[in-house]
Length: 108
Length: 113
Image (cartoon, rainbow over all chains, first blue to last red; front, top):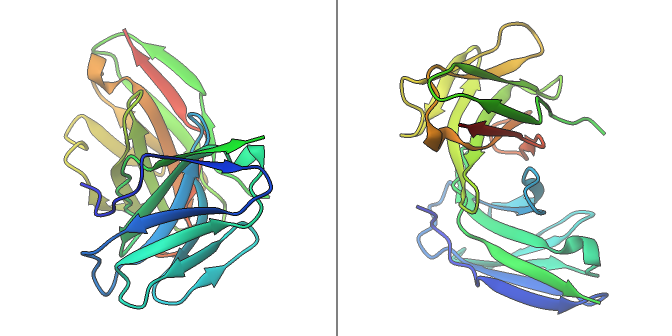
């Protein structure tokens, strides 16, 4: 079973920052926090991952709390194309256990 | 941008028949994976493959399933005797290293009738 807890759904206005929370209170020291998204039934798309430090790439930022028990994915300027299911996954390797994720809907 | 390619996009097969799903991973990647997603359910890990052998497999990946890298570019998933419950979207993925991003293909929708 997935080791993360995410809200089942969220809405965000187009152009605003989308902040998606994730709890992973039982994370182990060697486990990374991965974020993927799935648009309709397409293949999951990698967004970002981190171990301890905050990370940023061209798609998003990942904020991991100091105790590593929770994280937040930030999409800085959400567009309609960001409507998708977002998965937060903790894993030491890439044998990923997907949960049910957060269905993010971007509102025009 | 490099991508993982899966063929066919949709396959219909009769129960009990063998089916082979094909994937072309990204060329410099060393780690290969199969996942599946039954309609309306979670994405589930099936198997990982490295250096021409299985690294990890889930409980789903029983004796009916096998994987192979028959040449330098293809990575295949075989289901020997398909069951109705094998109907799902099957995703292939590859990665360059063990802990970096995995690139997923667009999937093969398998329908067993």
